[in-house]
Amino acid sequence: MEQAVHQRSTGQLTAATEENLKKIAGRQLNPSQQEMMSQIKQFMEQSKTAVATGDLERGHNLALKAHLLSDELVKP
Image (cartoon, rainbow, N blue to C red):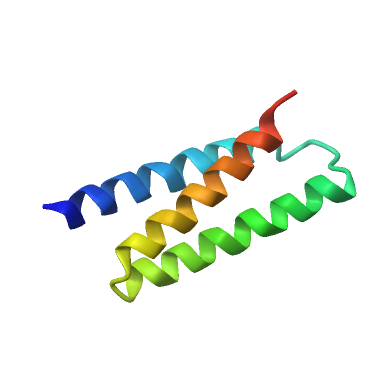
C-alpha cells in the first residue's frame, strides 16, 4: 500500500515539475537559474533511476527536491 502511494505521489511531483519547466522554457535564465535548472534535471534523472531500481523512498525524495527547485524558478 505504501509503495503505491509513493509511486503515485512521485509521479505527480515529476509531472508538476515538468509543468513548471514548460512555463519557464522560453525565459532567459541567469547563471544561478541555469544552475538550478541543471540541478532539477539531475534530480529528476536520479529519481527515475531510484524508482526503476525499487528505491521508491529515494526516488520520491529526489522528485520532491526537483519540484521545490522548479517552484523557485517559476516565481516572478
